[in-house]
Image (cartoon, rainbow, N blue to C red; front, side, top):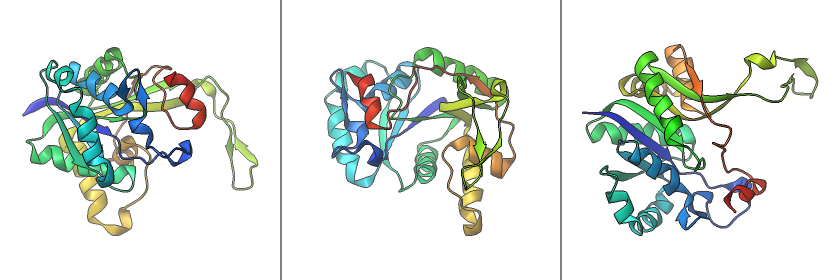
Length: 231
């Protein structure tokens, strides 16, 4: 069993981008967006599984094949599997695929739409999860945050010193995260939509989530305005 493995989630349709091409296939400096982060994890010494929607899987394999030599130089395996309609479904399907491949001790999960992840951030994720069992990249909020009700009326202003912007990668013990997802999916009334993997650990396992220092440059390409970062 390998110590670390990475899941890179690339199943989104990028509807907020307003483009015909899913954002993970946008080119940045000659490579598709999804390959930038995948290569960074491979170079960090771990196998990587890319999780794509069924309709994009073959295209992803063809795109990656163009960079077969660069991938081979890492000495690690790049694999592909099919995800679901929602992010949390893709995470669970990716975890199932990893289990079929023999599993790992720790799994790092990352969004393909964050192409600027660095070796330093990945290294901090690995150190944190080995010490604490959970590791979530985060940066302190530079803005004041307001909590409003459904009518748009401010009900709370949290202390900015305690507000963090959550990023990926997020790392967990593989067996703990897998069992959390398994428990969530085993009971239909417990399935809930979540936007990150730490939420599953919080809700199902009541886990203590440890934050580690991310990077303000580790942005997520989400809206048309973000395309300037790819120029």
